[in-house]
Length: 138
Image 1 (cartoon, rainbow, N blue to C red):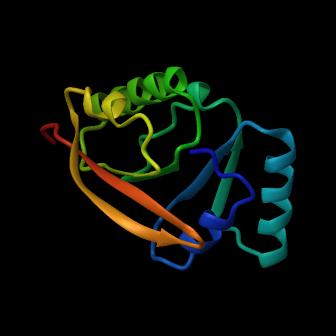
Image 2: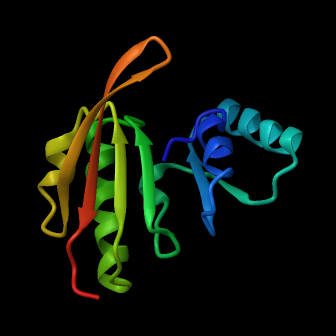
């Protein structure tokens, strides 16, 4: 969510995920991400150019990665969309949230709960990364 220029998507494409997608609102970042994906020549990654609150196609995904991509009001809507996906299609889902400014927004969900946190070094930054798992009967 909030794929920026696509760097993380490219890194994730090295792993055996079946579907990889990025959602980006910014016109310029979306164009740069498209160009970067063309340069590396991957067809494995799909980009969505839309507001995160309008993205509801979570059913095909078991992992969601975010690097604090949007404000809290958007996060609330995204969590609702993820929950709706889990109710439609119960499954194990993991959310990886770097720089988790709105931890309580996700953790307030009835079916998505905090699992663990990590402190990591990313480039020149010390970051927190929180992991959440779905808790819904399949």
